[in-house]
Length: 497
Image (cartoon, rainbow, N blue to C red):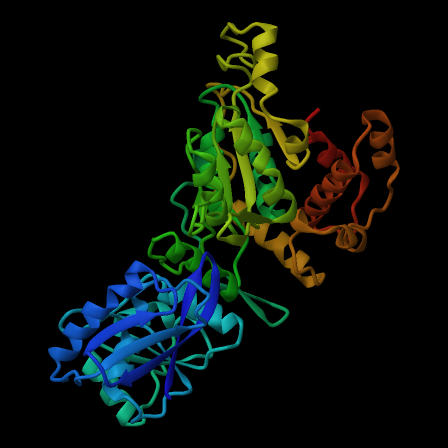
């Protein structure tokens, strides 16, 4: 019995599916078994119409299509093509090396679906796929994936003829149209067009310095200041000077975009996700009783997650941020589903100093009582603050403040620091270093300043590590091999007291 191969996606897990058919005597019929969802069951009508409009006559037999393994729920309309080919060709062709993907139109057209890219990328990461028959409309996306032979088709008849004629694969791969930085035989891609430029930000030298440090090492950042002082302006511009990406990271970002129902542009720009403070916990972290869906936190993977008006987010949502910030993963557990997503992002947050926003103002009077200010700030727990390495109390904008640095200049400084980190052999940037890597890469000329700070402020182990990582990035920006006293002092100045 011939089996055609395809795959399905469960949350973010890609599972290979074998499609086998049985043609037996009995009352003519057509059924699909193997825990198929409604979208797969509806394939019967699409496949029937596509086959009949292309001159195929159904035999007077009972046709049963089995999707194995039967214990896994099958989702998606991309299984249509494999089912139709199995019925149309029966045992006539050798297709053991091929995977088949595509939704069928009623006239036999083979259509693109958003599931195809993440499924093929997932199979490629597991090294389970070498050849794939895919819709021609999917080619611009799939051609970005290296080392896979793609056989594009526009119609069901094209797919049948393609298998009969021993086809040649599509060989033209899509290239990443971005600037390239080569370090240690690895290519890193980045963009230099700035929709939002730091040259628009007047004054705020300390906040811009913190933004540069955050971008260079992917450190978490908290901006606190009066309304209108430029917190959101800086956050929007920070997203444009984030570090370059490898090809695999670009593909991973595109995969998450498809899972979220969006069409990626494959530009070398890290995503910026900025949910509203009224967003529910499920929309932020993902969920679903049957099929777990990706949330905004997972969409920010390899990019930046920005929470404006931080204290106004739900308390449960803020506390749930601890896991993705610390472990860079998030787990969604349901009775029917358990999903794990990667969440390696830069977290940036902005907040007012009090409910009315005027606590830091030299010209406006704060209307809040001490109790109201305390209650407002207590919405953010100390364990969450401990995971934020950089804190800036923003100044008010004065009439004489001027622009002093552009995004292009800041990006060049970031790239210089990025090169130093990669040339040291770091797989992770400074802000994401693990315990053993901190000891390896954060070498200090003199740790007396840090020891004094530990004794004076009673710093936790996590706080000490955060200071080391920030100091390492500052040293990289200054071109220093080892962390000096001035680097530690600047790192300590960004600690929230």
